[in-house]
Structure formats: C-alpha cells, structure tokens
Length: 66
Image (cartoon, rainbow, N blue to C red; front, side, top):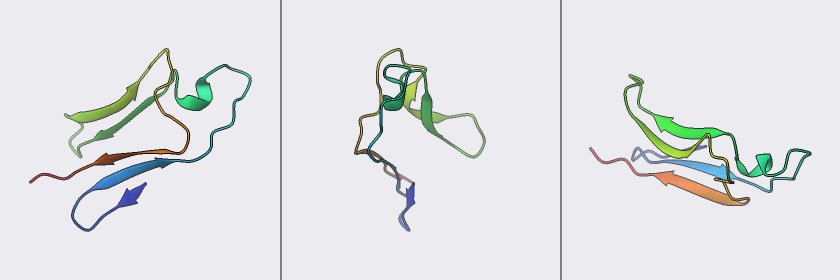
C-alpha cells in the first residue's frame, strides 16, 4: 500500500505465482477493499470472486475527494 499526503491510497500487486489452487494467486475467492474508519462504507476491488479479480503487476488507486 502507498499512502499519499493528499489522501490518495494505492494498492500495488507484484508478480503472483500460481499455487495448487487454480486462480487463487489472482484473487479468486478473496475479498479486497478499502473501508472507512467507521466500517460503514467500503470501496470494493474484489469480493469473494469466483474468477480472478486482481491481475499480477497491477495497482488500484483510491482518490480522496473531500
């Protein structure tokens, strides 16, 4: 994760090597999101997906908007 002074946040994913469970290395079956401090709101990237939801060598940027 990268945190920026302007409030932006980035998730960075590097090379992901396949294991023995198909596409698990690409986020299938995983949940990835950014949640607010109260736990009442979240921005989802990947939620219990049956298919790959995170590509190797990729990034997600969440842009702060006051």
